[in-house]
Length: 144
Picture (spheres, rainbow, N blue to C red):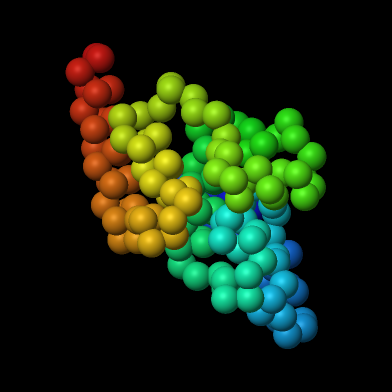
């Protein structure tokens, strides 16, 4: 519901609930916004020094990659509660489906790395997705 796609398959990730909230009221920097499975562990730990940073968004992107790969929301079979928050902060991630293009799983796992400093930048993600796409095209060409 937060992944928008046009007729030319251009994809935009959005969260209209948050954007509405941010325009209507001032956001408290100590509040946590979003849906639990997509929120980075460093944000869920609710330390005052932890603010939403680019690396936190990269974590969310990794979870979106998992959803695109499986067709399900991360942790779809669990309650979105404090118990899940604790599990995520302790390092639990959704199970890996091995039926994915070469490099996809590795990129996804890099995006949800527990250390925000070890997550890829958006530039690196773009480069890696380009390589994954190119390799997938080459693979499909070989199969014909």
